[in-house]
Amino acid sequence: MLEIRNVSRRFGKKTAVDSVALEIEQGQMVGIIGRSGAGKSTLLRMINRLIDPTDGAIFFDGKEVSAHRGGTLRRWQRDCAMVFQQFNLVPRLDVLTNVLLGRLNHRSTALNLMGIFSREERAMALGALERLDIAQTALQRAGTLSGGQQQRVAIARALMQQPKLILADEPIASLDPMNAKVVMDSLRDINLREGITVITNLHTLDTARAYCNRIIGMAGGKVVFDGPPEELTREAVRLVYGADANGEEISEAITSTSIRAERLPRIESAGSLVPAFAGH
Ligand SMILES: Nc1ncnc2c1ncn2[C@@H]1O[C@H](COP(=O)(O)OP(=O)(O)OP(=O)(O)O)[C@@H](O)[C@H]1O
Ligand SMILES: [Mg+2]
Image (cartoon, rainbow, N blue to C red):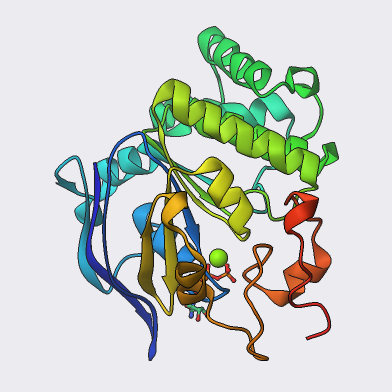
């Protein structure tokens, strides 16, 4: 179980995350929603220890994550894999090597320096690529793949870590609808089949509702909603996103930034599309 105990993070005078307390049982699929600047990325980054809390502490299975140093920190970062909006692959390396990089924290520094991966590791990497249905790209340079393919490579790399958690920061925000579905389907499949906890920031409500069994809504650094999708009523949505500048109704298609709403392909079903921010 992941326990976030009254965690805050300040940047100068700005409080990005404000006394957040959460308990996340192993195997949950959690979606974090909220406006731009609500603190979603900061929260994920603290779990992974990319940044540290200013106050409070994070525990996993009773051990204090925020106290890990050196080897135990390395092990923790292996246990909780990150998936980013911009994939973070090494574009000039081939896909297979990118996936193998997920093994680095399992290996000795000497082996890493020699850059030698075992037959088993290569087989495992190919297996991960097959599972994501992109094995045919194994020898291509990662930079030549489409965004959707690159994100699948990133998920295969995450699987190579054999993580207990996958933290995904807007994994589908740069993808077209079809690829967004493939990526979310694969995260759900990993969650269901391996029991890996998935915590993902999402900028559309429909996706959170469709894929997550728990939704956490953040506003101004605080958790303002925490419950199953069916409890996310219009009132709750208003609490998370607030009313927009003109006091218009919050639409189901709301995104965390108005720019994104105009720029990005939408993955919602056509029935729920309301161009809430167009023109503002
Ligand atoms: N490294 C940093 N230095 C200074 N301020 C920061 C830093 N990281 C985040 N912030 C601030 O903290 C607040 C929360 O940022 P965060 O990136 O967590 O929001 P978010 O919910 O992920 O937003 P978005 O939907 O745009 O990704 C914002 O006001 C942001 O400007
Ligand atoms: Mg963010």
